[in-house]
Amino acid sequence: MYDELRVPPRILLGPGPSIANPRVLKAMTTPMLGYLDADFVDVMDDTVALIRQVYGTQNSLTFPVSGTGTAGMETALTNIIEAGDSVIVGINGYFGGRIAEIAERCGAHVTPVHAEWGNIIEPEQIAEACEKVTPKLVAVVHGETSTGILQPLEQIIDIAREKEALFLADCVTSLGGQPIEFDERGIDIAYSCTQKCLAGPPGLSPISFSDRAVEVIQNRKTKIQSFYLDATLLAEYWLGDSRKYHHTVSMSMIYALREALRVVMEEGVSPRYQRHERNAKALIAGAEAIGLQPAAIENHRAPMLTTLLIPDGIDDVTIRKRLIQDYGIEIGGGLGIFAGKAWRIGLMGDAANEQNVLLVLNAIETLLIEFGYKVDTGTAVSAVAAVYQNS
Ligand SMILES: Cc1ncc(COP(=O)(O)O)c(C=O)c1O
Image 1: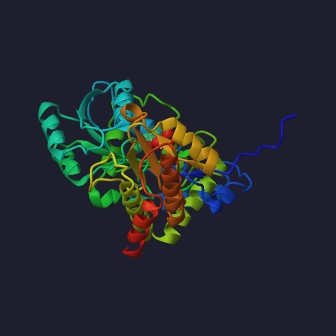
Image 2 (image 1 turned 60 degrees about the vertical axis):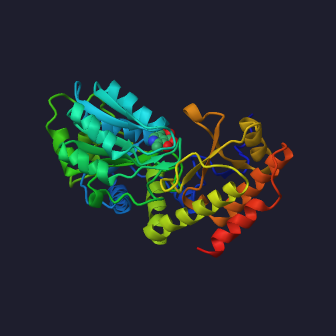
Image 3 (image 1 turned 60 degrees about the horizontal axis):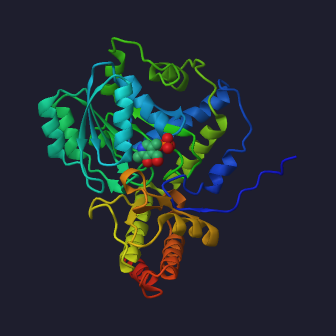
């Protein structure tokens, strides 16, 4: 016999999943309804309306994709791209690379626009690439979780618009933690996830397509290659007066997302964004006070994910193991070229609070001292306190 499932308590301060809101977990225990039950359709409608609110969009084609952020990425790219299309992808981290990889699998000619990890993609770089190719789509990552960069979007959107290209923003890490302003900024396609700043479990990817993007999908010459992720078929299930079965959605995840979005709207989007900013500022102040340098350039740091360069002589894995063992705290290791070189500390959704900032800094400081790193005990906490007193 196997024992009843029990997992140890964890304070999830990595790149996601973040700590799930208890209201969201409770919503998941709601009984199942049939996938076309009129009462379930009401829940679906609420969920779509709430997704629109948090994205800041009136887009009709808005729904949660079954699957995690990568499913949203695949949905966006599979529906828009046809073989031979030209796509420009900003790559300044791991997830920009994933967009390029999937776009290529869709048959696109990808023009990568590289920037160093920890830097933003400069609009001039996109403009330059647009001189060489005529893109159907320009894609960037809004919150690059591998580096902690929050990519400015406005100028790149203007450039894409000028070239009559669609603009895609990966909002997997940013939705619920920073403004997306989908319509105001003129984004054409964005997708996200449930397990980061929305403080839910992983499992859905809220996606939205502008009318311009819908027109592109409608004018495709070739069939959308994926049945499961075909937005035109999914629209017949998620939207409109007469719903049609497409696949059996996860009721529990939809209950969870609806509740997660309700929590966001109850807090208010602006106070929520400010809370993320204030706590990230405190985290960085504390980290810098003990000599840990952020890997992302100043003024472009994503408040929900801070990357810190690991000091010479300190072993990444040992510290992360001890954080879990001694404190029950999970932080992330580096991805790609940052593997072994940077830690990723997420303050996402519910987890973005003063207690967690103090806890994680205090724990890291204590362990660093134990492993011979020179710092006065309590330095981080004093720097953090100064930030909270002044903001
Ligand atoms: C910016 C970004 N895009 C895409 C993904 C992929 O999302 P998932 O792991 O939920 O499939 C992630 C995951 O961390 C991410 O941070």
